[in-house]
Amino acid sequence: MEQVLGLAATVWTVLWPALAVAALRATDVTLTTVRTVLVVQSKRWAAAGVAGAEAGVWLSAAGIVFADTSPARVAGFVAGVAAGTAIGVSLIERLKVGSTTVRVYVPATQLEADGVTVVDGTRVAEAIRRAGFAATVFTGQGRDGPVDMVLSTVPRRKADEVLAAARSVDHDAYASFDSNPRPVLHSTAGRV
Image (cartoon, rainbow, N blue to C red; front, side, top):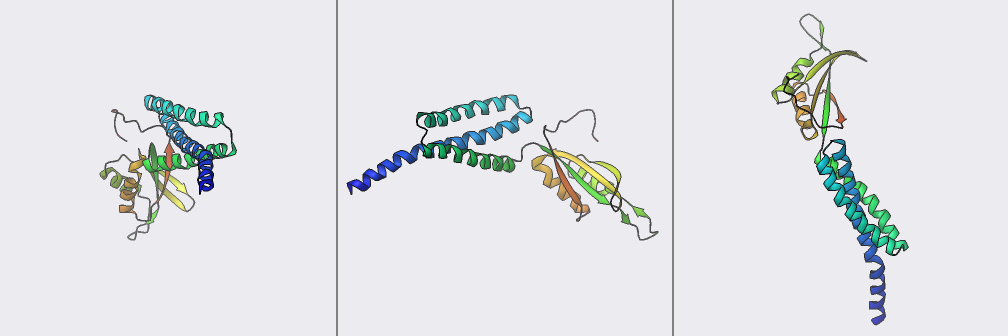
């Protein structure tokens, strides 16, 4: 029994620093992802605060590894980086940070009365505006003929509301989302 306890203590002595390094690296790489998004959005002070925490956590992990570069600690370091990357991306995705431009494409429709081809993105734009968002309509030529493109730039967490408003008018509306690196700026000059 004494040998089993001795072996368990030896294994634990090797494993706990590796697990600690993995957890610390997962934390600091997650913070790196958050800091990067904050920098892109020009949130200077929030990014600086996150960077300070990130540096402290990294230094703790590095100190453990540099004290003894055993294969287990190095493996913990590498595993933590991989886990932190996945966690960071998932966190940013879940938080829906930033803004996006919702592009709704409205194809031409046939009027039954006189057979004239009409493109009417204004109905979709009006529905988006009724939902409380700005919308701008552009007319263009698509693969299959005339098309209106309705644009609405909103905080990312509101994109589904814009799409729902558009689909309340045209349930088959094709939409795409463009990421914007900076937050939406609101002007007092007027609304589009």
